[in-house]
Every structure is written in C-alpha cells, then in structure tokens.
Amino acid sequence: MEFKKCERCGCFFLSESTVCENCNPKDTFEMSRLKNYLEGENYSNSINSISVDTGISVKNLNRYLENKEFSKLSSKLNIGTNVDINL
View 1: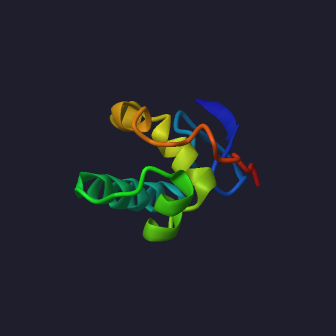
View 2: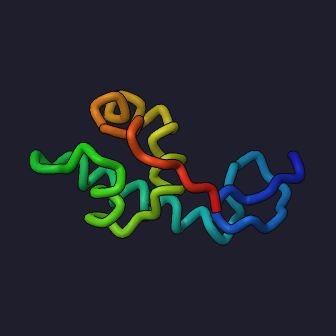
C-alpha cells in the first residue's frame, strides 16, 4: 500500500485506491448517478451542464470521465472547451 492524498477531500491515507475510505461511498454514489444520467437520451454534452444537472462538481466529473467505464462517453462530451478547475 502507498501513502496517498485523497483526490476528493485531500486527506492522507494508506490504500491502493485514489480516494480515502470516507470518500469512497460518495464517489460510488456519484458515479452511479452519472451513469444513470448518461443512460438517458436527453443528456447535455457540456461538462458544466452535466455538473448542474447532476450536482456533481466539475472536478469530480473530470476524474470520473478518466475512468475506463466512462471512456467511450467522454469522447462524445464537449469537455475540451471547459476549464478544469483543481481545488
């Protein structure tokens, strides 16, 4: 295991994951929400609009879209014109 900084909250932890034990359920819930949103036929192709529609931050959306589960969908989205804000 490695000593890492949680990509979601910034706390330090030991794990193979990219998020801490406290943030993992939140990530799982938001990824499920994003998947359900994208399965609909009338979703937006703008990451900012998806953020507003789902309540998921742009920062977290960018992380989720790097996940191989969403890789095919990210090519359809208009993510190149949005600013990636790292907080």
